[in-house]
Length: 184
Length: 142
Figure 1 (spheres, chains in turn blue, green):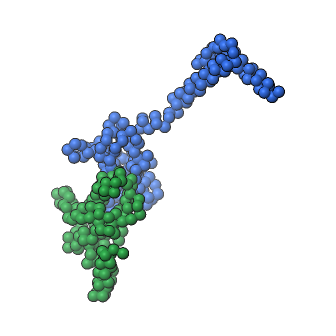
Figure 2: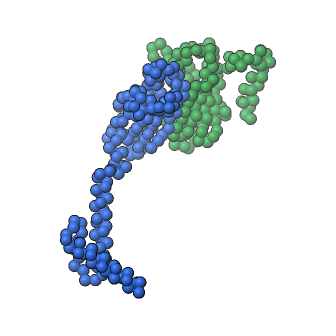
Figure 3: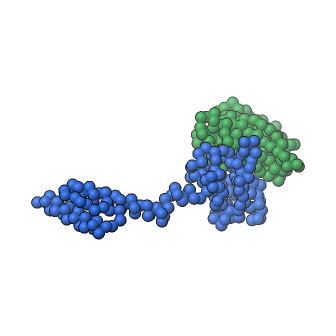
């Protein structure tokens, strides 16, 4: 008895769906179906089409994570002043890449923003396999804060083996110590 | 305990016997600048890691002062003597690339440069490196 009720409920659902389809909604097709099996098949296809369209629309609005990163720099940094517990703002950073002759070519320069970051270090096109160096002008940073620091600057030299990955090279800095690591 | 470590400890005891044994005396006989490399990924000292010490001269060039490899305790004694320890900018270069390559490990840093300023050569400066394949830290110790 329950099975029969379920069967009839399905038939009604599919019929209603087919009615809607017949009013020519986008990405749905009208069913010239004579059997329930055919109707169910078309029903499934229509639902899938609708889901695909909605997914594309959501991605366009919000941007998939990979898309967001592809538009930003593939190499990022972040400087935190662990002695004050704040981001290190207005700290000069220079980015270099080692050329075939073993010389360091200056790629970009800038000062960290109020969050201790420096967006736009590189674009995906300019990000190639090789040795890179980030120079953090820690000397000037602490001088401007009237703090005596041990390090006039900090060089972090690293190797990029896969330019399709995102590399995050932060610096945790204090006047007499620092640390760095490879983040994602 | 390694033979080297015992030798180091023995020297400390000898100095204590022959002088008033103040810590400064012990340190004065050793290098005023020391380092220590620890491999935090394996929890052991970084052995056989090549270290080079440089000082910046008046023309802004880095002069090579000393080269060597860390011992079984991750240390490299004899970096400097008190006579050669003057005020100025120094750089210690740790050959981390070769170190990890010899261990069959892929590392992010081909080498690590630590550049620092000595303002008082009468102090003792300890510049250690806590190292792992994808991160490192350093600090000024005593």
